Length: 498
Image (cartoon, rainbow, N blue to C red; front, side, top):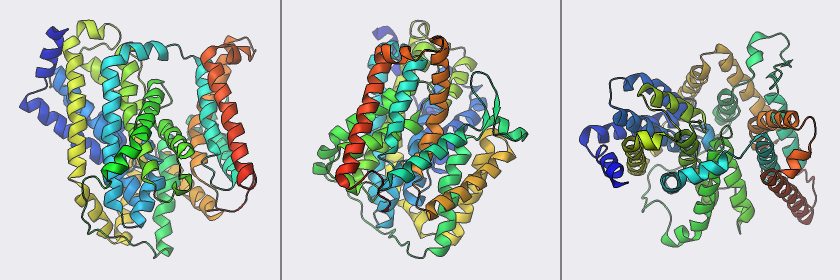
């Protein structure tokens, strides 16, 4: 073992490779912080640059971009209420309210530290338990994916604020929008109206940026109440030792949720941070503070999405199956340098594997220090007049929407869903259920149809398979508890809003 571990570590502990990690983390933070660019685009654009590098230098650069890109999404989420990446959706819920209270530095500090903890837990479990976790993940088929997604959809109740009926309608709207395009399995066109661009459906990134960014950019034109201080003294990461010990369980639980969801290919961090956030809210002693500037909710979101990095790398490195869109790009990086992910990767390229592990650890520490010492710079963005800052952000959003698939149609999608977001905000419909429905709708439908096909039209396999049955049971329990909680608070369909 030591004959590959030590050489793997030493292959990274040199000036050129460390500089590549530093460069990767920095580039990743920039791509994550700019709405629409994302870690996925950062890795994709950097792949051609790795052709002339050694294998370990190339993978170190790409891993640095991955870690920096996922964690960098919190910057826009906290400061502008715009998720820099899909993994930062729930970071907006409490990060931005803290900024509105003049506590942007504290919000960034707590988010950065949580990102580091989540990343550390995910990487540690990747290093020591990757084969074991991969064996569990490989047992997940369409029945298990369906049940997990149904369980995740039960989170709609917790994301619906006081009006459950509005939350459910918002979630159903998200599912309906996700059904536009060709259907899974049989590729039958639905709701396309013979518009060629609609056959591919709506992409997640333009939908997400449109709903959150366009409405947020337009709103301040009539809102002069936003004021926050950019001059502050930040002690540590913005929270006390007592607060840290009070959040240990939350950080570990959220990180494990992020890791568990990250291991399952096709679900990703955009789902795990929502599940971790809702779980933290349901387990909290002060759930009423969530959405109003809760450090607890912010930490849950950021620890979950960064732990998902280690989770997504587990199926990639042990089975050769990408865990998310970023690891799909990383698979290309492996192939470019003659590395074949899978069980034999640890045997044939042990030195490279442990070099990658070392690069991930170093990149996680670099992310912590680079973002911590950049807090003052990040918060200076708030001193820029918003009539100057927000149009610039809007241009970047348009660039990001177009760059995702090189389609002008995605820019129209951005604008269309931006208008939809403004209308829903005006009618006081919550937006998170719509996003959750849009993300999970296709996963539920695809795996339902595949599961029924395997069972020759029978639903029995969804109940008789142990893992599937457990998640369905948990989903039913979650619905019952949510309904009981609503009734106890005054009714299932309270129409008042926060």
